[in-house]
Length: 319
Image (cartoon, rainbow, N blue to C red; front, side, top):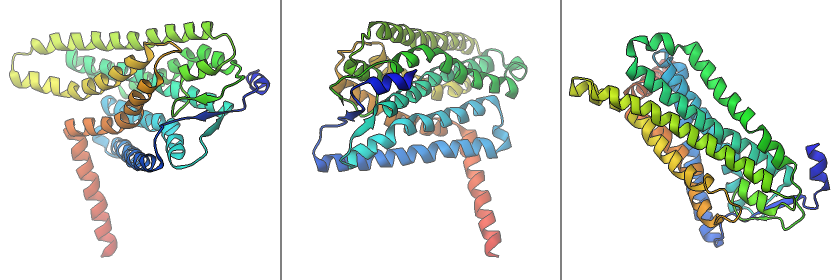
């Protein structure tokens, strides 16, 4: 069993080096990351509340957006609190079981995000290429099934690498040159032969990342050809505007992920990976709700209506 192998490892905990900075610089970095993390939570929670509370947003596109915000909250919650704790505190240790658990949940959220971005691209494809059939194809019930499928496929596809990582033995050293438990740093510390694990992870990375990216590319290629054939310029602008936010999010997400995970060698330069990881783990989850809110008029109106309702209720209580 997994716990048995962990108990036989001579290493019982890892030390996360994080950022090699002075105490003052770590405090400044802690403050910046804490503010970004709180903004991320507030922005994504706000989108979830808006989608849930406004009946006009009870449609597939906003159901997907609400689940995407929930995923971003989970994504950051797996890594950022521990990183903040290590920045401000002196104890940078994490147990072997805790480290592997963090890796499992981080991988699940990352894989789910790939599949969810594909689903969101498919939603826009149906809406623009088959507008008259959109209601029949993308019903709320079907959308919910797609969302559940994203989580299920991610969990199933990660079963083999998750079990493989759980079976690794660690005999020392126990220093991880990263701020969270990521795949390549873990393999570097294992005293088990990691060739098979590395091969499985590499194949899976290529299949998920490039497979999902190709599906998104196919969806938007069809969207572009459809939009080009729209006779009016207003219609073209309106069609493109519904996709702009999603395309921007896809570009940011895949730009950073490809840099790290399509170079799956244990000897990759971790210092470069740490900088890029900060961007897609800390910064991007804050930018995504801002990008969607800025481009989406319905979300802005829902936010204004929610504020007005809260203000009206407050005034009634005072009276």
